[in-house]
Amino acid sequence: MILVWGNLSDTPVERIVDVLLERESAFFHIDDAALPLMTHDVVFTMPPTGWIELHGQRLPLDEIRAAFIRPGELREARGLAAASTLSAIAASLDARVINRPAAGRSNWSKPFQLRLIEAAGLNVPETLVTTDPAKARAFLARHRRVVYKSVSGVRSIVTTLDTHQAARLDDVSTGPVQLQRWIAGRDVRVHVVGDRWFATAIESDADDYRYAARSGDSTHMAATDIPQALGERLVALSHSMGLLLSGIDLRADRHGEWYCFEVNPSPGFSYFEDMTGQPITAAIVELLEGKERHAVLPRMGRLR
Image (cartoon, rainbow, N blue to C red; front, side, top):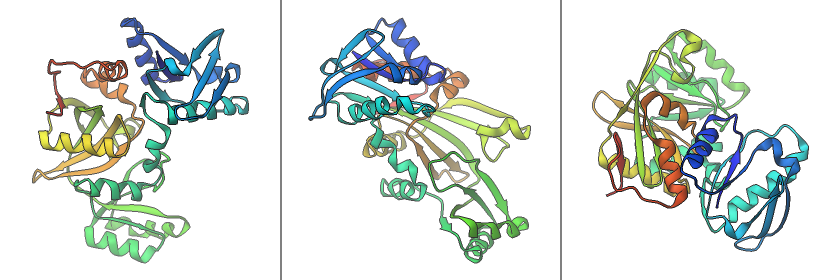
């Protein structure tokens, strides 16, 4: 049995459920809206024992072979107890879990995650985290153009800053900000699924392609290839963080050097799937089912 926890209004969750239905795979879905209705009797040994029940269906925990976990933001206190129980179950199940709650914690602190990325042997741009306007201005003067973003896992719009806008750096005194040297080049998002990877080349005039429409800019995406050695290193990085699924943001500069910016532990892969036709959902479901595919998928890499 495959446990799926997440809202059907969230496209990645909807895709997973649709493919499971198409493949006639046995699964048990819990929507956040139904959490107040969930009952359970669980003993948190290792692994946990007991059962959860929803809409008259009872699921013994020892029948769960895999789980896909992508809960939304809870808006009702009534569901918090059930959500806490499910999180604890996901953390301790003797099963394949995409992804365990603790695996995403490195993304809560971008500076900490950058250390992990660098330790994995990947290039990261020169970075400064500061609340000192003088240090921020010196960093900008040295690099002429920088990128700034939040230091936490809260989504922020990535924006560039050049020397003509140096006066804005006075605002860093109100809270820590992360500045990075601007890397000119081509953006590539790589989704790692188990030991496979799907690379997407992104072309956009916007500083942050995710919000290109807001500034009237266009974005073009296409499946692409990355070097085998780089793909294997990204798989190793993802696994070192405890992630079976990740979205990794990269940029290749004009000299062919690759830089890694961030590892997203809960990527919105369906958007990239729509833009490129890459079978990311199918790969995730195969991982949940514990099945291997021997044929080479288009624009996809895997460990040798």
